[in-house]
Length: 198
Image (cartoon, rainbow, N blue to C red; front, side, top):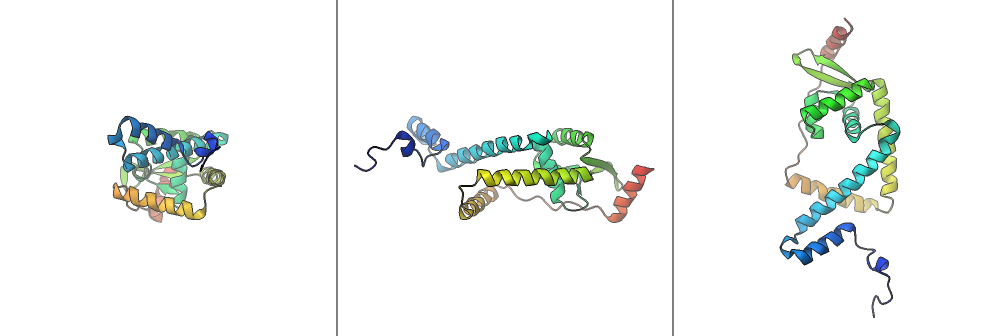
């Protein structure tokens, strides 16, 4: 008979944790057996695994995931590695209070500098310091290397197909790229630097 003699581990080799949860709910409440619910469970599971792994990766720097995300977004902005707090919030989905706490912590660590906006006295700019640039690059390299290990059994074509499919799902539920951030002119930047040193 096909499959005779297989251990339970071998029989379950093609099932993930979500399969077990889905099977249980299918038995208990068949009306909630929907593919979109399964998608939610699987995306949430991957998110938990990645967030836990990132937290462990950042331990040598004593950084939180929020710290890393702010540094990452600023470094990806390109030289001079600065954005307004509102642009950071729109890219990180943090509240005003949440972003303020992260920025205060990064400023105390010397990884960012904040300067007032010469065009809007109520606004400000957040810029990576040289230490911030180096830390952003070092943590990004460490996280990429860790992902290479995590995904070692995932082929490039599988990763591309999964990424493309998730993009389509995110777009379908309204998750769009935010508008391009406002860039500060050189004159504005020099004016702020001069004011800061005065």
